[in-house]
Image 1 (cartoon, helix red, strand yellow):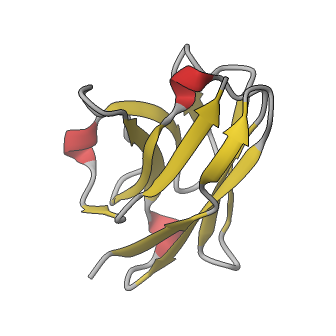
Image 2: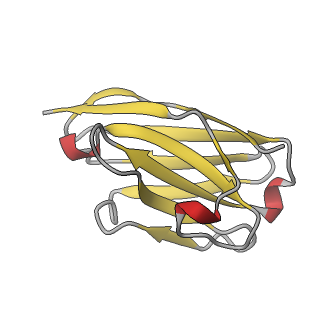
Length: 123
């Protein structure tokens, strides 16, 4: 069973930084692509970034390119999302998800989801 636990969210001022973590268990971590999604109040969930299972290829939404960096540590079964130059529009609940494939870009490709961590960026 895919189990994912996000951490690292919080309140930060605009221009600040946060690093989110996604700790995984219950599956062969190396075989899964991991994605980060976010959902702001009243808005649809959107993909933020994803990282491949095997060769650490990455993909980013245009809105976060150059500011967010996704990485994975297979020895720790953990994926990170380093966020810098945060903006108020980054405020959302951030979710990580796992997909049993090399790389996945859409939410429907993901098999399991975490509970989310709140990120709030004040202006």
